[in-house]
Amino acid sequence: MPATDNDTVLPFTLPNVCRKKVSAAFDGGTISSDGGVFLLAGADQRLGLIDALAALFPDHRDPSQISHSIADILRERIFAIACGYPDGNDLDMLRADPAFKIACGRLPESGADLASQPTISRLENAPDLRSLIRMSHGMVDLWCRSHAIAPKAITLDIDDTADTVHGHQQLSLFNAHYDERCFLPIHVYDADTGHCVLTILRPGKTPDGKEIRGHIRRLVRRIRMHWPTTRITFRGDSHYGRKEVMDWCEQHDVTYIFGLAPNKVLAEQVFPKLDECCVRRALAQTEKLRDFTWTRYAAKSWSRARRVVARIEVTRKGADVRYIVTNVNGGTARNLYETVYCARGQAENLIKRHKSQLASDRTSCRSPLANQMRLILHTAAYWLMRMIQAAIPRSEALAGAEFSTIRLRLLKIAVRVRETASRVRLAFAANCPEARLYRELIGSLIPRPT
Image (cartoon, rainbow, N blue to C red; front, side, top):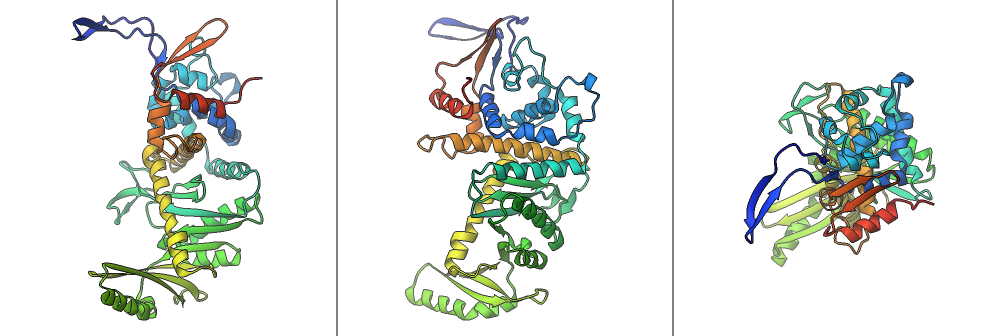
């Protein structure tokens, strides 16, 4: 947070140290506690993310009355989210922060302050449904264009998460499973990179087959506009393995691996293998035995029989059988379950980063359109944080660190800012523990001026 040179409050004292008096006052000058915001600015400059979003954002304001461009407001809001300020109210203080002003392209002292909370609130409530769809499509387009060449195959993890509400927000419903009113937004992640491809706000109930099919259809159509020959695989929990979804995937050459709920028919089909595992464990006197098998199964509502893989685990306390359904014909049952499907669990960790470490569950607006806009803003902050994370060399201790750790070690850095007639001088703490890494990241994210 910024500090001023003119402290009108009298100095205060602290306990003596080695017989020397310790006095303090808020007169240190123009200082910010968010010196790492320049890394976010560099990541945005490399991606072109915020300018791309601003170009898709509707702006019906009177040009003669505009003080802050859409890009400036978005940049300020997204940088604040990444730095740990998830509420629009925080911008009432951050709008004068010298580091934020520089990162947003304004002089720290002589430049005008950034947008305040009312302006931020008007921005979040401005887009209509079509504009939000355009921005979501634009982020998918930008993700596709970020690849130098089209990948041969991609795996997309799709899942939903409970977003608890504490008011009367539209679309919020009581969910008996979570025992609270909530939204259940859908998240889609690229399994190889951990990139958040799409977030969709939706009611607090389990999605049905038609809804899931619609989301997947629109996403696949957008991706194939850029990568028409790329093989796309979706992984999801059992409530994504709906007949409408599987039929559509098979008709449009999309691979899927979904969980499948157990039933009596499946239990009868895998019983011979289960019985064999029980006998083998008993003879070997082992604590646990795990094996795999597969079968062909068709529910009454399905259009055809499909490949079902069963994971069988037998212990002294009993047996546990889990199932997945897939249209992948090759590969062993063990490989499909342990290597391919179980890797889907990483998506839950990515959702935690998005939801907990970037506070994307702050969907407290009454309008669902405004809450979807907030999801887009938090997803943009996720992109910037992921790019900083990816830029950290693997030899560093922070390589692969959580967003909260990166924020604490690299973004929450004190900096003194001095503006003169010809330049702006930034002075970081001499004993900053991550000084070398910070300098290296600045060099890799921000191009040198020519």
